[in-house]
Length: 98
Image 1: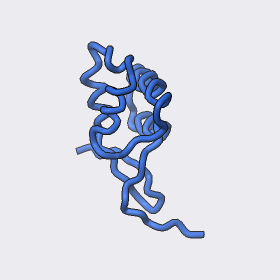
Image 2: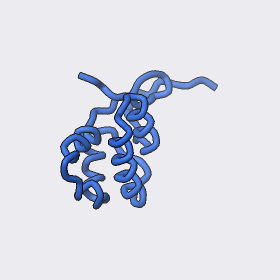
Image 3: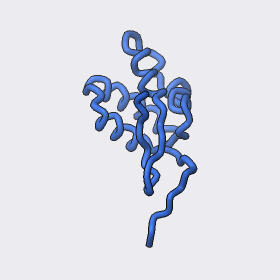
């Protein structure tokens, strides 16, 4: 059975996004913050669309922890708003560093 290339972006699982952040070297303290936010969001949804702003909107809607962030909110907002692209035969999500 062969894998076909699919240029249409698919939804992203929260576990995939966390893995991307870990591979990208996000510091442990920020990873823990993102995990807390995802724990609240995933009580409502299990995946999100790859379009810019989708994950940030979910954090605003479903994460009181995110809404209450103070000092690191701008940084975490940037992390949650990073563009996601899909690459390769398996249509895997990747970050774009411009």
